Length: 154
Image (cartoon, rainbow, N blue to C red; front, side):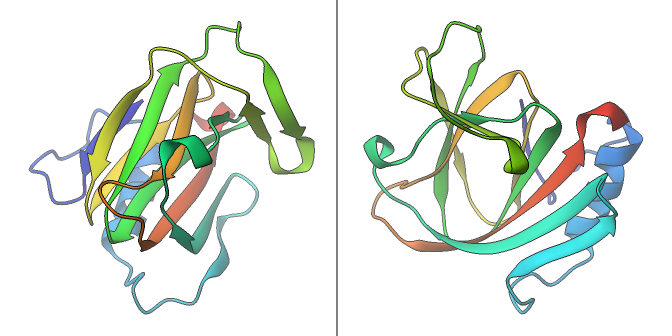
């Protein structure tokens, strides 16, 4: 898992080329005024989901992971906490939605949280279980972008 901001002084040159392309895309688009939906960036290799979501209590948000794609989650408006923990392989799967490359878990342990404000991005790799859209203080509507990057590009 990587957590940073598009406003940091980092030039991101050590990141893989696919991730650098995603960060450049995040820096150069106005997601506040963009319609929600799915946008093609590089076909099925890299695509973008612009969404509005409701944050809520950690107990109402399910931990998840993906096998074939990385998630680059970028916060446009609002604030959220994102949970994360390594996938030890010992967690019980609650639901697997193969066509969405989405695995939900019943519960996880040793979960840490990062606090995201507009401009922050988190990169979750297939070995990272993550829990998005946890309310930082009060539940709110947030605008976020999730860029799906095929793991084989990394």
